[in-house]
Length: 429
Image 1 (cartoon, one colour):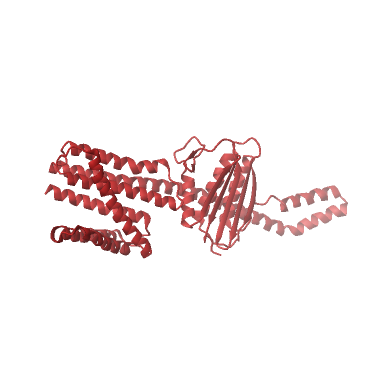
Image 2 (tube, rainbow, N blue to C red; image 1 turned 45 degrees about the vertical axis):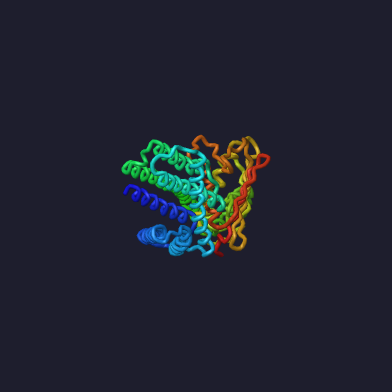
């Protein structure tokens, strides 16, 4: 009985592994969690029933392969929207990775030449599932990298530490003969499986929540940019309206100065009016409030630090864009540039270029910096004392770039930091 319960737990774990991989790599159809549970639960019951029948009544082990292929493909076809070719590749990967995990376990057992204790088959089955989980997690990270998502060292550590620790614990329990005892064996296997699953979900959820928090903070700041830009625009147009309203009186004053031949007073009065009309304009004046607000706000920040802001903005005023994604990209790039240039003693300047090309958006930010940039892999880390969220800004930008099948190009040569962001099919003209 203990063996049956343990095998049941292991098969449930296997199904959860398959769902984890599919959810992280495929495009999920809309539907309730009940529908999702019914789909994967149906797959679990159907495949294990067929597998049990093949093993106990037919006795032809290789028939498990087509049984798995058909039931798994049917399940992912129901739950995900990807093309059949992609679903077939995932089905083949799932089967081959599972077989590879079993081969590694059984051959590894022979190489280690451990003392045979208790039910060796159950032990090898459990170990193979954890190795399979490790293969799936590594593959998930590789898929993320293929989508231009840079990964931090802790992402890789999370992949290896828990599965490796689980294998070591199981090996110790096996050698001690504990796994052969029904209650303790079942409990140990169940707890270790749960630890693997929950640490995976909790780590991903914690990282997702942190990224959401950073995005929310960026958007909160962006709202203040919009309010400021709108307020300044209203104030400026109100001043223009008053100026136009008083135009007749201004002409009367100028005529009075002329009649008195008080040219000094006339020149002074003229210069005052000219100064008002030619007051400094916003550095970005495209008419698109989303583009103008963030660039003008950052330009004012730079001016307070005596940083020259050189811009070349060419984007239609009526173009539609994803405000959230644009503001996160632009805001993070400009914040990083201002932070770097503030440390310079001279040549404190930032070059910003934003161009629209049909539906595509081109962003380029260049700036000098003083000290070498700290990196973790390909991720540039902040130079601020608080490194709690280091690297996440660039990671979020990379996610946005991947969302639009775009490109993120970072060049770091001769003290110049040059970042290019290309977002395809981003604009709606």
